Amino acid sequence: MTAGTGSIRFNTDSSKMEYYDGNQWVNISSDSPEVQTGGTRAVAGGGQNPGVWSGTYKATNTIQYITIDTTGNAIDFGDLTWEAQLPYACSDRTRGLFAAGYDHPTLVNTINYVTISSTGNGTDFGDLPYIRQNGAGTGNSTRGIFAGGSYSGSHNTISYVTIQSTGNSQDFGDLTQARSSVRAVQSPTRGVFCGGGDPQYDTIDFITTATLGNAADFGNLTTAKKYVQTGSNAIRGIIANGYTGPGTYHQVIEYITIATLGNAVDFGDTTNIYAFGGATASPTRYLRMGGKETGGGYTDVMDYVQIMTTGNAVDFGNLTNAMDSLAATSNGHGGLG
Image 1 (tube, rainbow, N blue to C red):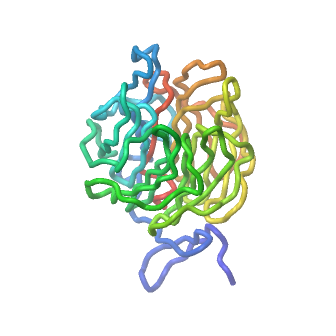
Image 2 (image 1 turned 90 degrees about the vertical axis):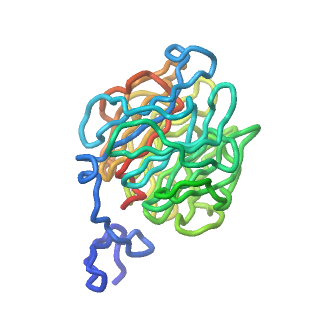
Image 3 (image 1 turned 45 degrees about the horizontal axis):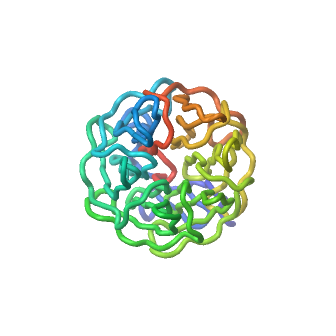
């Protein structure tokens, strides 16, 4: 009898609990965000709002954190070593990585890391092999992945690091097409890249995180769009909002089952019409944060959904400032099991 996706068993050979991700049995981590931080902690870095940080494209180096299993406002964590607009972010149980982005007046290739369970400033990790902004960060308990992005046009490059080391990222492969403003969800075995531009795509493609190689086709979003806000547990990926040109923002939330292939399915709606924000997840909740509303106003609003249900988002709290162009990750996302 074939096991169903999400089935759980006790492996008598390894004496470990495992779940079936649709392709293989995967260890259930004995560590947890509850042990690390008393609940899944999200860390969000960078962002911009000219009304707060003066100057065209002037960004912030702020890092803030949120306990996803509660509701409430974000709290100051520390600072990155650069002012980051549209950086990448990924993490394991203990470290959060932020990479690249626009540091007015230039792009950078810097990677910083923080210890998620503490507070403090970012520490130098290494560099990407290129200057870049506005791509997707993903990964699992071992690897951090940085994909796509823009610099004098869109790129299909994927690179990776080993999160518990330090050093420069290495070539992994390529996305199925060059895309900026692409975002990602993940399971312990897969990274899945959703939407992007330019101008905008409904493309979803995926990689096997533990290997090297090019991405393969997964399916399609319900609408071609970029600047979506994504997060996942190990089973289901949530893709919210997005942008398809001046004045055209989206309120819809859609989802995919990461272990399968196929098109995204309607989930519900966020509390307003947003794009350009950040998002991440715990094993049970998807948390969307900040961005712009229709008309271009910046927001500090955070809202959430329960990942394994369907329905509309509920208010969570507020960021430390209204902003867009931030990146977020957590110590309990889907890549960690």
